[in-house]
Length: 429
Image 1 (cartoon, rainbow, N blue to C red):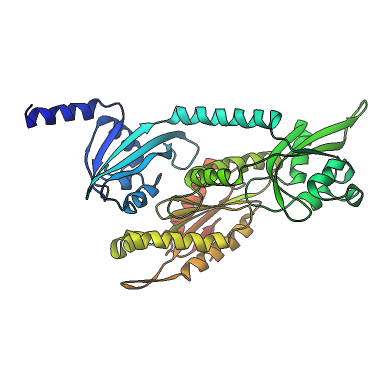
Image 2: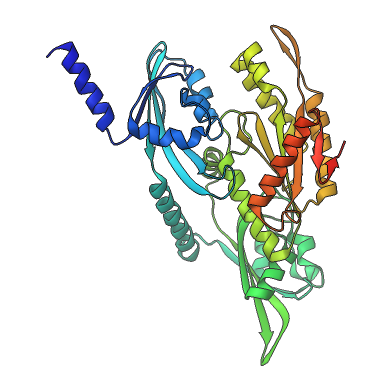
């Protein structure tokens, strides 16, 4: 077989292959791709040229560049089925979501092959199966103990069974007459509702179930399901009290933590990833509708970050992103979510924060970033960031509107000279 016919057959295979195939160098510059790959990349590129794999995915999977750069062997598989969650049409808003599986193989010193496969339906099915599995597992398996309490409409404990003492370490006689929220509630990261918020939802809908960490009297944490059910006395249908059931269930802490890290963390910085940020925003939006709690969003963008990459190189740029994440997460409140949304852009989700509180935190973040100093081979590196913030109330309860408003104010901060916070009708600083 001639070399020419072999090349023709290879091209025919590439164009007929039912998955996206991309050949590029280690910097991501594409030499060859088939139609399926083009179908996946074009919607992501927007107005940009589809000429670089990493640049095209910068807003959706910025970790691809660092995965390739950190792969030391001369050849081999860089990643296998790495999942990329993208939003089509409306950026970070709740538009059409798509999931791609990406595999990258290093073929030589400056050559790699990437495959892209649409696994959106598969991921949706996996999620449904996980939900079903969790539901049945909690019904049938591994329940260690039940603690049952009677709680008044204002949250005071009227009665508690013996299992409550065994499970929590608190004696019933010592807690009767006290507020259950004062004994069991702890301000922990994540989307757990406070007890009074659970009571509000249960009063309206009849019941509410929540699963998460609970704390014993000695400070030890355990995994617990908390069910709140409305009780009525006889024929009197007026709300009088609640039953609260605490169920301790086993949890494989290490395995769950590993899975959580993979699914929720940005590969490069350790901040929350775009997918988790979107899920947290939807969860807090539900809380906003149910209990009318305040919700604020801060978006921040590092000023002139491209200059840093161009002058100092991507390794220094990556170190800058990690340092910014470290500094910002130290200032985050317990329920706040700090995420890398793509490239040098980050988001901060602040449940129960009004505009004044969010402005104060944004200014603290701005000052902290401006104080960063990093030694480089080319001298001391300093940086600044611009901020835009908005609240869900300002956006009339629309998540899309909240994102658009925060983005608009971010651009106003940049247009206003950078290194500043922009909120409401003007600059905060």
